[in-house]
Length: 112
Image 1 (cartoon, rainbow, N blue to C red):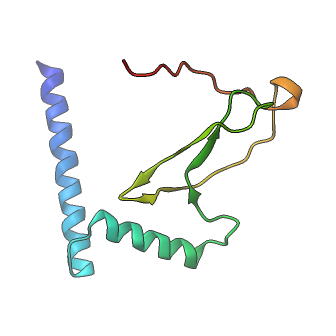
Image 2 (image 1 turned 120 degrees about the vertical axis):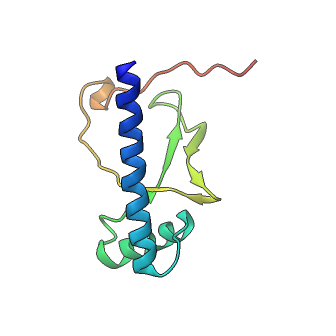
């Protein structure tokens, strides 16, 4: 129906913009950029432009049962064997137990 056609046109428009930008970037750089080359450039750029205090950090989060327990594991995200880097922000604790932020809780069932 109509919504399907609108979604198709939106998708085609996004593909056109992406193709145009990719072609312009390849022409400016002189070659096709792979995700790995772009990641290398961004790491270089962050080291040049950002102070260590504001630089992105590898995504890594400890997993624990509660604030009273030691970490039981960790969650990290990697791409092609390299940790992804993320910008982080620390917020003052609010609510929860002992003035600490409320913990995230979710069921983690083993796969059958």
